[in-house]
Image 1: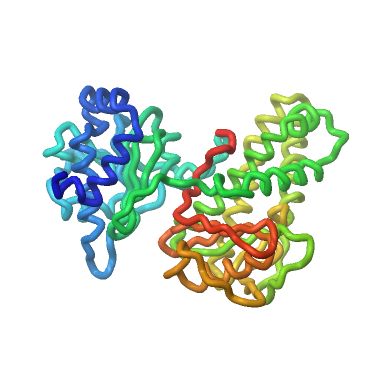
Image 2 (image 1 turned 120 degrees about the vertical axis):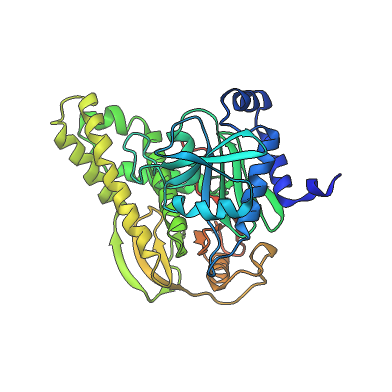
Length: 399
């Protein structure tokens, strides 16, 4: 094996290429000149890796790269050649904003060019209920068909994939398949229980609710899951970090200090439903669905507000219905246990949450300032599971 094949960028490229259909993307790449072939994929990821290590005034580049046939929002009259890593570093600030990406052309592995900048609306899409720029994978929902996406997330840290196929994260010289927060043990059961409680809070004498909302509980499960995913991705992209703890026990855990607060998700959900019913004049299911498409965006506005609370030192605490009870809170526990290998080298935010979860049934999400998402969970006192390097995307939740 050649030394070049052992380079971290080459390892990432190998994983990315194995995960996608060779016929599907290589043929399209050669025909249209937009999706990279195997050699161009290696070249782009090597450029991205080398650029990620170039420091300027104490800062490293952070940028998203997309190869797709769609016309970029801002088109460069003269396409910029990316013959070396410094060229990518210099052009990267043009797509630093949330929801933007460099549009690359990869006709020839030796002639990678930037043809402009994609600008994706940083709003909640009322149809898909997703943050359209909330996480980099949602690019595949905005640009139809297969696309190649890579993102520089820090020095030597690259995430890449031919979407919608699997994406991979390169960090510390190791390549990992992206893992989702929704795949963590008790997550689905916790959200399903909360969704059932939300439905139970609705009036039971409105016919349209029986026809649509109550008769299809998956709608509420999907919505609640997407709201939580938006909470996590919003916090990760804000760059401040944060900790969210969902208390699952029947008895009060030792959570002190901070700011006691109330955001009753059952009331927020009920008010949105009733608002949609009033706007539709209780006419028919179609009228209600159109009104609900607008009213449910208010739920995401509440999520954005709650995400902002995580910037206060301490953690944000929810009950099992995902209703806010406190923020800026401190977690207390009886004793410390030896940290598992996954958490060694992390800070107080991770270790305190782990020790707390070992003594209290809870589902916690810890987000570091660099956007790393860790889930720590326990369904009974005595032990806690730890899941690192998670992605805030969705899996089992209906798309």
